[in-house]
Image (cartoon, rainbow, N blue to C red; front, side):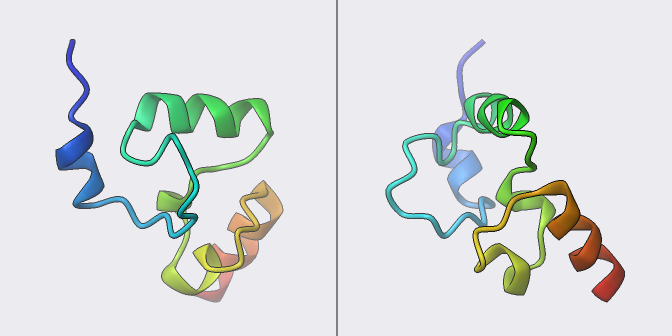
Length: 65
């Protein structure tokens, strides 16, 4: 299976520029799971900008929508 990195980048809302996993969803998800976090695509634009990827931050963001 080939990665669709270029296609993924068109919908990726991650603003963390030095991220080497941007557009490579399988690596992004795997990384954030190891860190007990969620990737940027789960967050609103406002919450994503905080770079707080914790599950607690997701719950706060979700409740605030």
